[in-house]
Image 1 (cartoon, rainbow, N blue to C red):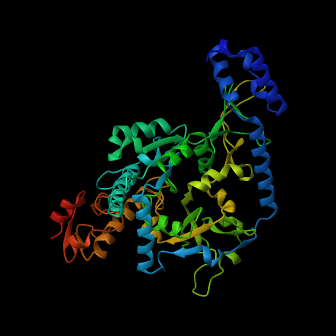
Image 2 (cartoon, rainbow, N blue to C red):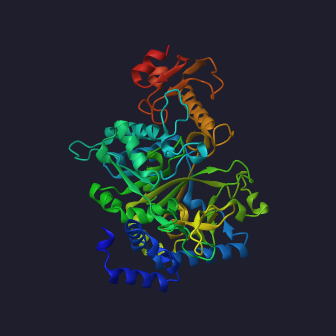
Image 3 (cartoon, rainbow, N blue to C red):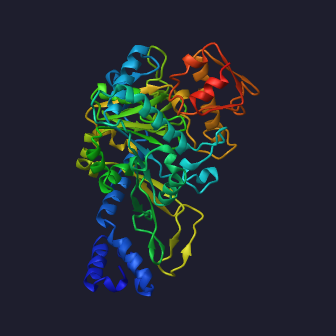
Length: 502
């Protein structure tokens, strides 16, 4: 489209629409712009549902005001019938869940949705966070680790294929990017030959955006010809799967269940068959993994009941007294820490549009670059100048009809990458340490031992097992039982393991 293609009647209709919505100021500098700038601004505004923006703003403000009035949420612990634990369950029960999950994978009924819209800004990198090198001995990025887990799991599931079953047992990987990370993510995968996953089985799609707003709900012009926008939060997945053809793709592939997780968790068990099997066995439409809170004061959101509905309640919304309440066995009543790790049925995702208008949006006050409407000068503020509106992936919990919660062992499944190198927690060093510590545990659980320099210092130990070799510690005993592995050792194949185990 060129500016000559814009009919005067269409331009006037768009101006009227924004005027009626109280947002007419976005055309303040339109007549001063070059033809190309006019086209860019027109296309941006024409694609914007300004009435929906106003509705979201109103709902977000009302929600914030309600929370301010009621600093402490009316919360109850999770009912026992929706909460189970891989830590407390017997090995036979966990094996049963795992078998159910592997059978679903073998039948092609399981997909993965990765929340990968974030950049590594806090890590000192402008690249997508999934590209980040946490200094593993192998140099593998988060994306590569996850790809290899998918490939290993597909191999494990093939033993459950029935003779003559045409299903290939493929786990399609849907990767949700954002505007700033989309092209860079695709280019990274292409440059690495998609890490061995067939390109047709990786589907990249972008989460949506929302305009940034002033504190009184006015759309912010970043420049005279551009509205300031921001990703709509990880809860943007629900709109994105509807708008980008993901739902249709899931249907075409016969996918019935999805595992959804965040890219920055280096220990994420991608398409975890135990979690899939657990949720399928309970006919779950929306499920969540949790880890036990380390202490009552740990600043994490907890999964519980809020006003009788499933929800994630932030630490700040629960009083000290409530946070310290315990069950008879000593565990915290409000100890189910949210780790951004979810199960959805395809049927549930298809149902989201029926309650989308009721989903909460949350206000994040930020320093947002803006154009002064009087002078036309672009301002880079030193204090918060506006807000971004976000929906969180857990905002759908209250609408689940069959909700399930599975507690997992934090040291085995949760090590987020949030902070800059050297910060001491949730940083590259802790991610590396936690993966290597897990790999040593895999060997020890299989009856072997890792020795060598820094064998007890996992931040320095040069030892690693590729997910190609073992997804979660399986398949090692027959090789390492009663044997010792000398570090440094990078185990990329079973042959490497056989050579290393002496």
